[in-house]
Image (cartoon, rainbow, N blue to C red):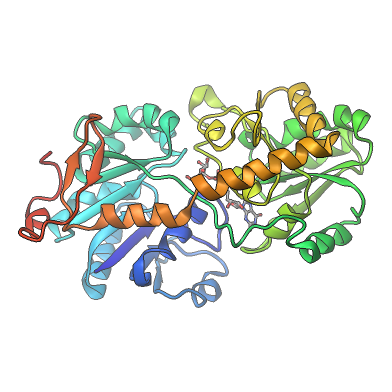
Length: 409
Ligand code: GDD
């Protein structure tokens, strides 16, 4: 049966939720999905490359209005979809009661870092309560986000962990992708330099500013070091000014790269760093950080800020280090430690590759999501209150979940 994916976050726009939704959409069995999403420049050309239909609303941001809800239901009927995955729970999963009345049998809503803001903002939290009351499963990234989002979802919400992953075929080491790495170094005239890489939207909480402020101390120990900042965003101008002040000529801004363009940058780098930090009294935090997984899969040691769920992506002291994302001195120390020791860099990079391959698999997550989305698999609470597991479908009563799918447990 077809899955309708309702989401505001979908490529060609770049970001973690977009990467997550794309990874699931392309891995659900038989690509039996239809995506309903918002419009953006370049969308038609991108959508034409996908093996499933993508329906773009005229709006640049979808909200759970009557019109959008009606369109979602119409698409579900047209494509024979009896299950819906909300790529981000807030705000679109608020349409769940209407979809249920319209015949949708199973609904799963995925939370990321941004639902922390919704959960802790008076008024906005009511929307999450509606989501928790009406969808079948709400997924979360890890203990940090769960602790902050679950209270707003209310006691009837069924929670299940669903983590991002990384595609081991898409990210390679500098040895495996020697040509890609060489081209990146030549393009930016970095041959022979030691490269610190950061890949991320340019927004304050990601910590590119602290990374730039750490550069003078790094350069004292590693005079040939250079920082490569990949990504675009509202903080670009301020970051360029900071770079001119703290490390003139030592910071390269690539701007945003296209969908497949980042892998060669990871292959070219010596260490990955994103000293993310929690802002606005906890309203803005890192949900997890797919970039740390991409870096590990590329055989890079990782320096991660201690914000939100980011520490979940690093085995501290083994695959990289977790640092105070507000401290240029701590960031510089962590970077210098790996840049001055090729042996340590290699050891951490290899450990990271193994960690990414064994613990962070998109295929495993897609299989898990597919199971949760199956309306013929009854959901039952497991021993942790508020958690759900999808049981094997019962051959005797396949329609049970259809009649009583949502909040009985
Ligand atoms: N091609 C390209 N070009 N990709 C980019 C660029 C760019 O310029 N900038 C960022 N990306 C990609 C990264 O490669 C990665 O796949 C994704 O965008 C960023 O993901 P995250 O590191 O997870 O950060 P986020 O803040 O955008 O994502 C949010 O949701 C994630 C999924 O739940 C945060 O809450 C994350 O913590 C969370 O992991």
